[in-house]
Length: 78
Image (cartoon, rainbow, N blue to C red; front, side, top):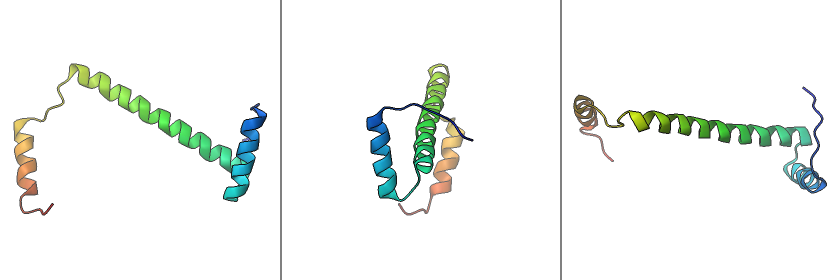
């Protein structure tokens, strides 16, 4: 997909320099940067959702599950 965007000259020049240094096109650089930015914000959304859940729900394991985990680790070397 093609898109027109406006960015400050300083940012464009820095991106152009970095793209040349990395041996990639500006499109590839912008795509990688946007992917990283979006992924970071998606992780934040997941953290916020989990925080919201655990304000109402306990985050402790049921005793039987703890016992099962301990048994499953017996004999394991750490």
